[in-house]
Structure formats: structure tokens, C-alpha cells
Figure 1 (tube, one colour):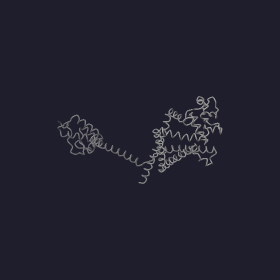
Figure 2 (tube, rainbow, N blue to C red):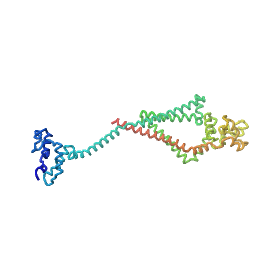
Figure 3 (tube, rainbow, N blue to C red):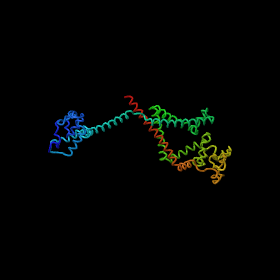
Length: 395
């Protein structure tokens, strides 16, 4: 084949670019280095090799010619792939440029993974205290702290209103039948526990948070253990509870005015009388049916019940405080007694109320348990965060 139609011979110099094919390509190569024949001479002329990279026009014409007339038998054909790869690599396309890009891609992925690992390590080493847990624990205990102050204030106001605030002997004479003591003791426990949690969370004090966790855990264990014991030993606990309630509520009914008001409110609300039946009031000194109380002392309340046991007249707003007089005597028929007072005991009335409001009771108990469990978990989590932060400072 004529030399004009042959591809260029193999270039032994890897850094040089073979002579562009055809006179038009040579002129284009000359224009790449400079205009006119001088540029062609600077580029190596028609018979030499250019010193710089080939222009885009020459590469395009040469590649078209090689694709149209491939000659596998000519030694110059072996150079075509080298020339094509070299020119594409110099122009940013394929060849070594693409290979380099493919080699750099895993390195880029490895670098991204390393950056993610370094970021995760910095986040882990920072060990910052969770502000969400800290202030949630603070505000929740602040609310309970205010509730404890409110209960204590109600108790002190009740003592002041009764006029026994300065009488220490009267205050400590009957603490179990005085509901004011219940308010003050409950309010004091809530106040102390909430103060530990509130101050410990705000000041990040491990000792106060531990005390708060211990007290809250004990309360939680007592509640859960009490519920399990009531479920397993229901009959035995009910019998003992009835005996204690008879001694406390029936016998000590007139010992404390506030306790008397509490018993009357319970009997009025649940429409019950006595612990198990109206006959329980025979254990009270004032309502006893003995002959001495009726004949000797001529007590009008003897063999009767408190007015809170009576069935209210819906058409009258006036409370008849003498409706329970002599209602348990043998001279009163059962039909008349049923028409005048409630014959169900408060234990049965309370059981019936729980059964009819079981969903409400379960939801309330669940909310109380969840609040205590979340408070305990938040306190332990905050203690661990504080420990990690202090360990970081010691490094």
C-alpha cells in the first residue's frame, strides 16, 4: 500500500508524539505552535516529530483515519492503541487518566470512611452531658418540689385554723388519726426527694443524684412489692386492714375533728356506713348500744350512726345531723333502717368503685410507675454522663 495510506511507523520515543498524518494535520500542528510556516517548523515540520502535545484537530483526524483503515499486519498498527490512549490521557479522557481516576476512587472512599470514623471518635470523646435529660429531670422535680411545699403548707394552715399550732402535746398525741400529719409527712418526703433530684440535676452533683435514685428506687420497690403482696395474699391483708381500720376510723372517730371530717367525707362520697357494716359503729364509745350509754348517760347518739351514713334527701339542701339517732336499736325495723341509712360497708363500696373505674385506676397507676421509672433512668444516665465528663478532664 502506498505510504500515503499507511499509519505512521512505531515511535520509539515514549515522550514524543508521532507526526500528524496528512499535510492538513501538519499545518494544524504548525498552527498549534504558531501561525504560518514558522509554526510548522517549530512543531517539527512535515518530516519530524513535534516537541509538544498534538493539537485537538490532529488527534481527531488521526483517530478517524486509524478507525477507518486498521492494519493488524503492519508494525505501526501496534502503535495505534498507544497513540490513542496517550492522546486521550493528555486530553483528560481515557487511557492513563481514566485508570488513575479509577485508582483514586477507592482512596476517596477510604478517605470518607476515615473522616466519618474520626468524627464519630470526636463525638464519643467529647462525652457532653445530655441537656435534654438534665433539664427534663430538673423541671419534673421542680414541679414535685412545689407540690411538696403545697402539701406542707396545707397541713400547717390546718393546724393554725384548728388553733393547735402552738400546742405541741396536742400535736403529737394522735398522729395516726390526724390527717394533717399525713399531709405534712407526705409533703416532706416529696419535698426532700424532689430537692435532691432538682439540685442534683441542675448542679450536676453525683451525691445528690445518687440519694435521689436510692429513695426513688425504694419507693418503686415498695409500690411493686405491695401490689404483688396484695394480689397474692388478698384475703389475709384485707382481714388485717379491716381490723386496723376499725381501730383507727371507728374507735378514733371523735378524737380529732379533721379525722372526723375525713371519715364523714368518705362515707358520703361512697354512700357507705362503717368499715364492713353499720354495726361497726358499736365499737365507738359514743355510738355504743350498751345499756349504760342509753340509760345512765342518756346519750342521744347511743345505738346510732354518724349523719354521714344517712341517705340524703335530694329535694332538701339542709343536712339532718340527727338522722342516725337510735337507728340500730331493736325497735327499728330492717325496712325502716334501710330507708334511713346506707347499709353497705365502705370496703365493699370501695371495691365496687374500683371495679367500675378499673381503666382509670390502671391508667393512673401506670402513669405513676412510668414517671418513677423514667425519673430513675434519667438520674442514672445523668450520673454516667457526669462520670465520663470528669474522666475526660482527668486526662
